[in-house]
Image (cartoon, rainbow, N blue to C red; front, side, top):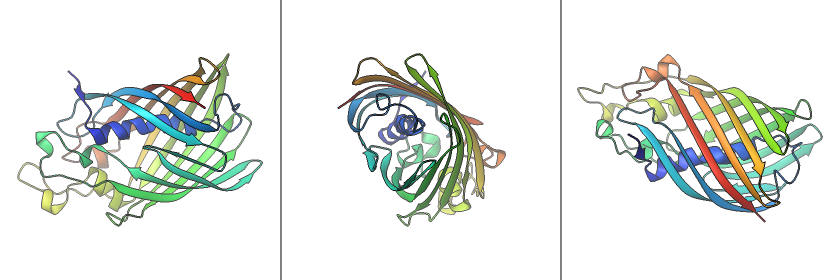
Length: 257
């Protein structure tokens, strides 16, 4: 039996739609990646990797603004273009970090309460071909909560299928020990008899994803995103982690103007 997402966890899952939009290679036409405002609704489901979790569902509204110079949306944050060349785009990014431990519901996780933090950093997109990109993204915690860092490398490929834009991606995310402790660890003041202190150290999490954008009209699009993250032993061995992989799907109807 699934249960509704908590508000923060729902926003964290919803960020996948922003990732799906941002991951479409720059060669895609303006119809699939328009400038201007986007409003809509998204829903999705996925497993909860934390102890006491279950399959979860959510439905949320979407508000996003996109241009070549910058984009802004909730919960995916702010992107500002710093440098644009024929085969490379460099951007500054600022985004909230949202995950289930910010709003704990499970009784097994009582006594654990994380705060929403703010990450900032740089993202570089390198066009390898007209359909393939290498994306590098580095973030640091600027809220002073845990001072962690994160680096993500991904290879993305766009496959046009009639009117639909289909993209597949594979990559990995490295997280420093401070950030990994925030996401997967148990701090000394959170430890108890059945939940020992745990420090995962630095972690690397590989992932694969598939996204699609299908234009229904000139302004209305259907978008979908599937993603799987494969947790290393240093994560799955944590006393608050109950899964070996994080799998989720998001679907939405978006209207751009």
